[in-house]
Image 1 (tube, one colour):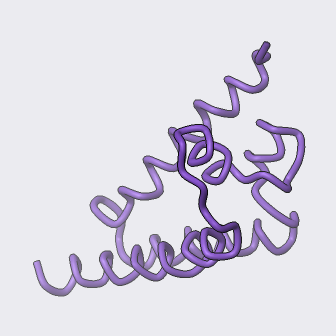
Image 2 (image 1 turned 180 degrees about the vertical axis):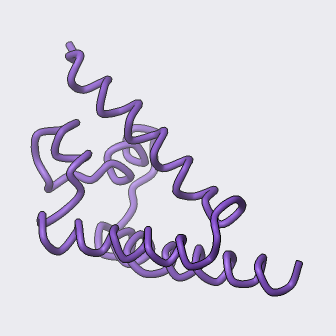
Image 3 (image 1 turned 135 degrees about the vertical axis):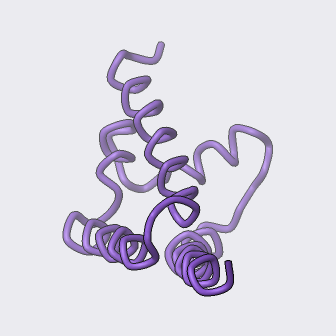
Length: 103
């Protein structure tokens, strides 16, 4: 049975991810870059996501990996990590810059 701690970190994780992924729509592009930099600082200083650790109590199974597998997908951990650590942050920065300069 899942505990209060699990659900607390689950909903906090989802809320922060929604806010972060939509941030290019409402934050200045420099703040979007700052959030990406903070994400990298967290990953490298804490050794992974603090919310994932809080939710699962371990770092070997990430949030996305856990729920993709739960929904029937079987992602490769290395490819998923590459997309989450490089493709998505770069895309967010590019979207924020494009929205700033082309709208």
